[in-house]
Amino acid sequence: MPLPAFRPLCDAIALLLQPQAEVVLHDLATETVAYIANPFSRREIGEPSLLHEIDFRPDVTLIGPYEKVNFDGRRLKSISAVLRDQDKRAIGVLCINLDVTHLQTAIELLTTLTMVPAGAGQPAVLFQEDWHERINKYVHDWTARHGVPVTHLNREQKRQLVAELALDGAFGGKHAAAYISRVLQMSRASVYNYLRAAKRAELKEG
Picture 1 (cartoon, rainbow, N blue to C red):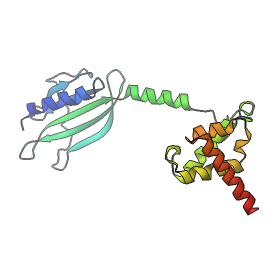
Picture 2 (cartoon, rainbow, N blue to C red):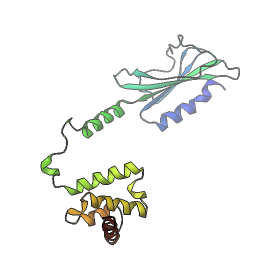
Picture 3 (cartoon, rainbow, N blue to C red):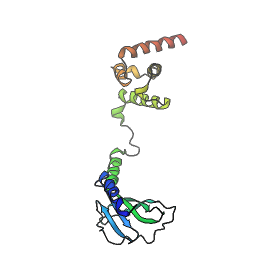
Picture 4 (cartoon, one colour):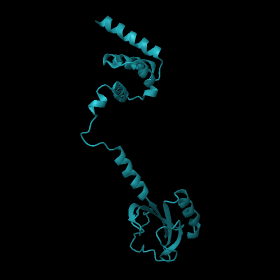
């Protein structure tokens, strides 16, 4: 396949990842840049490729990913594909340079926003009477322990969870039953039925 046939591929990749990707097509016959899609590195068509030190053994198809730095300091994640003709001879290199600067900035911002200072814990003034928080944590821990999300709990699992919540004193708060019914996505009548069943079982065992 002649090297110009790869130009639409360069355009497609750059368009898909626009404006974060630059795609550079190198011609190994002339050792120059043959084509650039979405140029942001200030490279120009016809300038030297500077690929003479790359090993183009027959088994080499991909090089990277590897990290580069753009002229303006932006961080790039790059990968290169060796293009070969029908005789398996290397005729070109297609390089994709992905600007990950904004992604890195977003990751750092999200990390900062979600970070809680070490040892901060929960302020006692706010949480000592917050039964909502205690119920939430209990349900979260219970579902994690049983490997099932709240939305997938079956009737028996809900019955068991209500019984264990009752033993833990979760129904002591005002309107706790209504809140638990919403958390477990069931009617309040079902919650009270499970509560009565749990009490009967407890009395029977006692």
